[in-house]
Image (cartoon, rainbow, N blue to C red; front, side, top):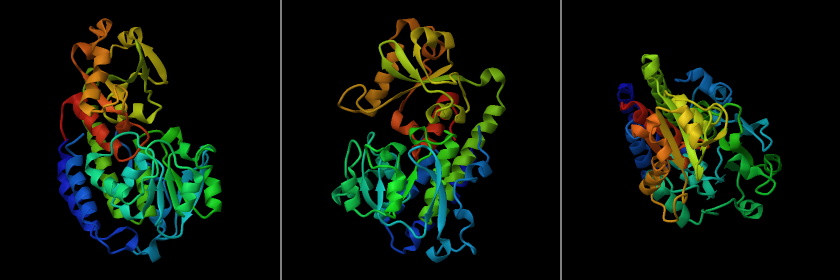
Length: 385
């Protein structure tokens, strides 16, 4: 499990070298972006079933073969064609003849991806926060606000607002393209505006696993001609997943943990994230067995019957009060279980094997997912990378 540290130095060099060149062939530097990318590369391996690398990249975009001579110049890199989706969850192809320069991020997940990879300058507008921006990206987000680029905090902006910004790319969740929001992707493409929907947002793709999350990252690398950065990120994630798989495969059958991943919904009721959801699939990416294969509401009696070795319970902003504090929310989520006297003999409760996670970290995709899997593994098996 120490292989992550061995590749960290190489990743740091890669990230710091690539951030000397701005995305899409520009030579402008951004000191804050360089600091963020390098710092996150340093902390990724320590903060929080292996996937075949060919499986991760297959079908994600045609960009890998677009440039004939491997040059990083825009002239050689474009056009780039990706496979994405419309509101009806149908696959469509979208071609970028050049790097986007006016991007609308419809949700926090997309905004954080852009900020993480230092693409701040290409953002024309952001909207719809699910919670607090990642701490390491807060200064960059604050600058967007100062520049008047925060269109909404809750909900999607209206079409007129977005049209006025003359975007050339809308990077969104599927729900952003509903008729009641921005309208279907076809309407925007007729206006010359490219679109991309995250595969795991609103259960869009058929594969709702970390594989699809990494495929989204690969597409962003292709679209903005920063594949050196995104490839390094994906390679590190795949190394981590392979390490987890190798370690867990070496365990005895009785040593692999059985887990429930749940969310408190009402008195005596919990929603269980199944293996068929991205959130539920992360349990298995972290080397455990998710006991629930289909979406279900669980009662106290159901949890007793499952008798999991460990429980991961998620919470969302303001679920336990308007004054949001992550530590307090985590404690409140765990208390919904430990406060149930009938659950006292459940193995996970009796042994205190309960982890609270912010829903934003494990839902919809984005750069939080890799760290979340790492944190789950370390919690479940008590071994750091």
